[in-house]
Image 1 (cartoon, rainbow, N blue to C red):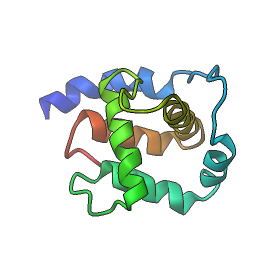
Image 2: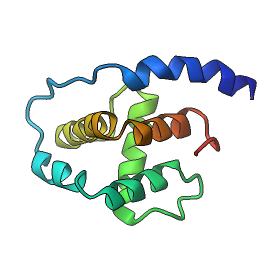
Image 3: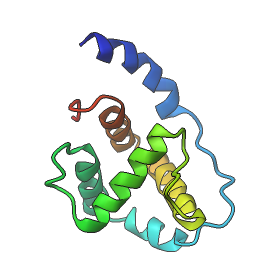
Length: 118
């Protein structure tokens, strides 16, 4: 509980800050933006990311979850990603933050405080 109280005030500036927009070329930009038009698909992905058991993940979602966790641990860098995967992940996170801030908040909280998914 104390950890939650200490971390939550730090989340506000992270969640509501202006995301980077100078990504350069995003290889799968069109497909990612199409995916974000499907609310059920986005919510399914967030359910996967916030699920500690991985029971809610498809194979593709699990791969994205692993890369997202790596980005969170390494200050936005996915060390195991190709440049194309890195650009795609950054674009997806920007869309998540700007189009669905509530879901972005769930992701950040779940990654920073395991077991605290809501």
